[in-house]
Image (tube, rainbow, N blue to C red; front, side, top):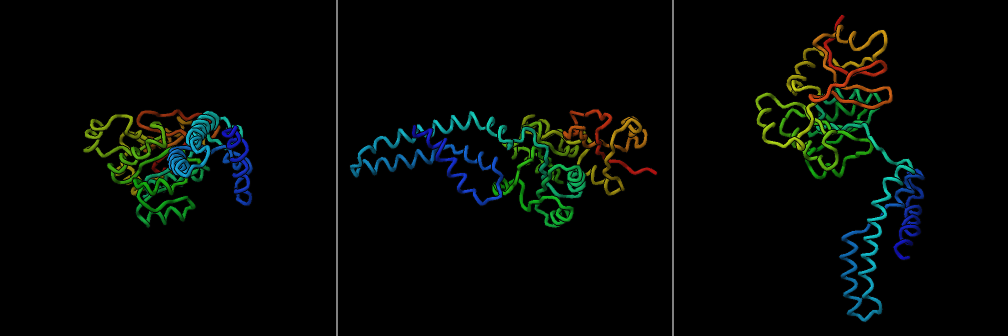
Length: 296
């Protein structure tokens, strides 16, 4: 009865009262009221109190620890089993978030992120270079100034709506470390990095197990140096809607070998990433984002 009263009455009442004047929506307040698992802190504190109360001769002090452990077991079990269902019922869950976190805010990252931002995808860019951050902010994108590998940065990041991480810095080692750093937050299929330079590719391929490496963005030739050279030589990122009059074959005929497909946005709004191991097929109705050399 005590455990159920905490879950059904006390916690919801606390959450609703404490968020009364907040900007949270009712469904978000209700979800907060449903989540309050207890753990090691409660166990440790109750043990200390039980000893002190028993020494003081307080009647029933011996019940404090077992009741606390009932609370821990009950809240963890109930919240753990029901949280996904409650989140879906209250419509606060994002089963397939489409946003992207960029490790790096250099020219490559900014150009790619801007086009995704224009396509209404949530993006965030992290960089230690203030100039890069400033340029990204001018385009209206969310930025974070700091080291992507620091624990403090993990606490600062707002990852709501973010489902993928792109490591696109100029340093191949940092890219590998970045995708590894986020292995607890993102599934291996949603962690991407630029292909390493040729001299370091063989060593990295043999030194790291596959599940610790990110998927190579776009294709195996799309290294940082290659993409920067393309952009510096006049290549641009362009969005093309595939139609009956201008399909993927027409796109290839127009831009030829200069075209490097980057992303595909389906007619249902799903973002598909071109990688070294996956090349989606653009169809009528899809929006194709690619790196091309402009033609007359």
